[in-house]
Length: 237
Image 1 (cartoon, one colour):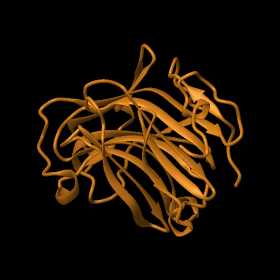
Image 2 (tube, helix red, strand yellow):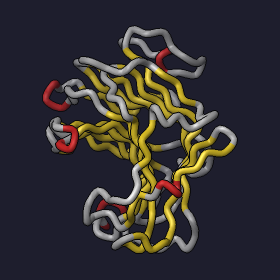
Image 3 (cartoon, helix red, strand yellow):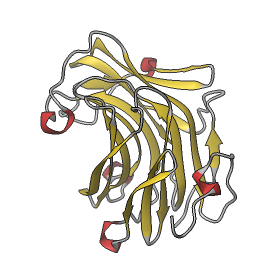
Image 4 (cartoon, helix red, strand yellow):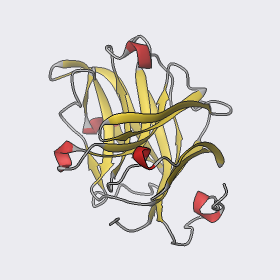
């Protein structure tokens, strides 16, 4: 599988050659907000993506998303981030490729449904169909401090980790993505997906997720920082 090269981004600056900032559109009617570049901010090595009540086009709320311009394949993906709380919101670190890229819909997710930030949902999509969904605990809470979320994507296996602990593993070849994907961070809301995200409630304030680091380490490449999963994982864990 082809892949862009390994990288670590500590957000000491915003690398516009790496990141595309979504602006002026939404992912569909299920989303109650429009992506706004104004809600992506960088300060003191922390990237912030926010959600707020602000009339923008046909929606009453604005929200934030960034995505890489390049596509990445097998390797170790890891992010250090902190979410907020609030019913009807989704704070996500994930990879995705789909029809707008002239590819099948493949996806690998960490999604904090902030109605309950004590947990994070891990799952994947294969040919647009959800697979391997599982809610796992985030010790101390996703909203109380920065936590490390990572997954290891190999040809015959996919593993998710929270703070270095293995929380889910898939080896069924029919449930493994096969297409290089872009890396995303997003914070958005919905007043339609209530069974999943909870009933949306106007938080009455700006809600923010923060990211301190994102890294991709291609399989077989040396680990890039001491805390990296790539330094410690083995075939057995």
